[in-house]
Length: 214
Image 1 (spheres, rainbow, N blue to C red):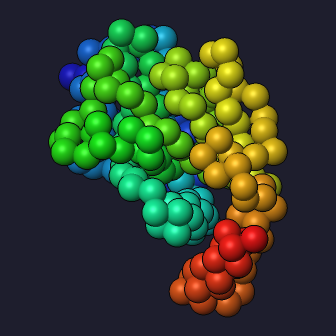
Image 2: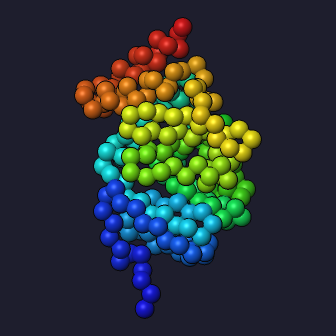
Image 3: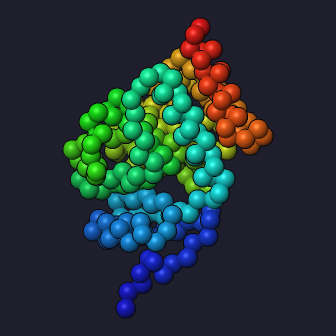
């Protein structure tokens, strides 16, 4: 009798690599695990990686996601946040689950969709990866054509922009070039751990309003 993935127990912060997984097997595992665990998956050419986030990983993800939403609101940009939705394209044999992702320029194209099909739909415009115990799968995002990827390691924020099919580190965001985000995002993540989430968001809104008024 074959082993079912629902039988596996992974502790927070742990990773599991599974070799020789074809696309049909990956689809089955994805469906099974979506009902049984909060684990995140990454798939590339037969190699499946399963990772269970640490609590601090989830905290950083939520805080940075909140900060991004405030920026988009203050800039009056419509957006659609799809969280850690599985981004996959069977034609490319790649899939990845970001910590969170946003449709901004292409928000209207996917606003009413219940399911994504990245062989037809555009990828998200911005994705975030928290790298505390895992590694960012840049090649997966490159294959999917995602234009901007943020990587936060608990201390620093890196902004990666897709240029000619590969990511290049940038000091500024493609979507928010007027803001020094590699400086302020880590600062406000740490502030949230001192003064609390709500106080941090209020403080960030004040800073952002002053910055945008310059």
